[in-house]
Image 1 (cartoon, rainbow, N blue to C red):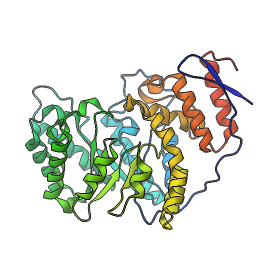
Image 2 (cartoon, rainbow, N blue to C red):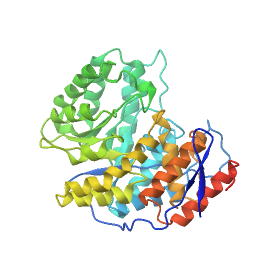
Image 3 (spheres, rainbow, N blue to C red):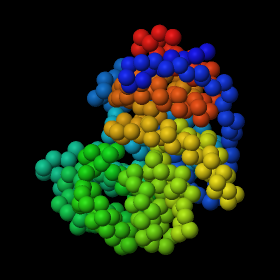
Image 4 (cartoon, rainbow, N blue to C red):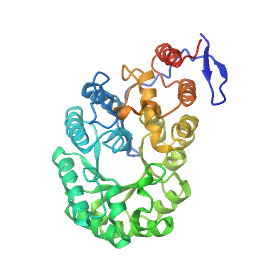
Length: 386
């Protein structure tokens, strides 16, 4: 039946929902690329919480979603910003998420890497670099004890405390020297988190890149790879070509990922992406096609998904999680559209309606009829007659 979807101009447009999903079953790990999906957390809708209280997580549904990703051969990047680190999920919740997901990964044979940050520390004018370093060390210990790979995330506290590039070199050098296994370094741009403006000691991205590369060059044996989330494909390719031999680039560019993963004659990017949460099965199928050497087939599958990704990650980009969780609800991975911190309210109805339309057109919903009924319910709650 026709749905009438609202747009940003206050008018309704007719949309005919898709009736058949893509047939995408589970599969094995990939051979040509290492691919992580940054996974969202499922809130407990029955918890009596407020936006500023500790997160209440539905652990069964949260872990079930990770098993879904592993079943398609994807790795899970855990406790990252997709899981609302610093936007509803505090360090206590993140630590429990890391421990539970790492245990589940061992049971399933799934690959997992977990975020290490400093979000248990609220920076003030009196905060010292030693306190920032200690916060990183506490979280690194939790991740390493869980058996997961560590992802050293960008730190709001370090951005607020560091006086210049030398402070970043000191803190990261100290952490890399003590890391038990090679880590992934994460450079998250201010479009994802405004508090990270000027990371690596400069708002000049060329200067910041120089410091970033200096950290890697000093400890290449402790850096498995880098995750770059700047939404700038040219800069990522340039950075990728300047990495020491053996250090991988994991694209975090949710605008240009097909071309970056496909690569060029000088190399390619692996992936650690929030958009691979809703795209999981389709992304996995595309990478398996790429494993056969069929770059055109890979692009044919993945290029049409970029419109959805650009829509979900439109400014203010940090609210992309709302669209990710919304699509998980429509796809049947959870029974409700609620989020920790109340962030289900962070995007408008027209934004969600367009997300549904784009995802449905791609065949992402295993049960299109259920997705249509849930979309119809949401429209009704907002007073949009059908």
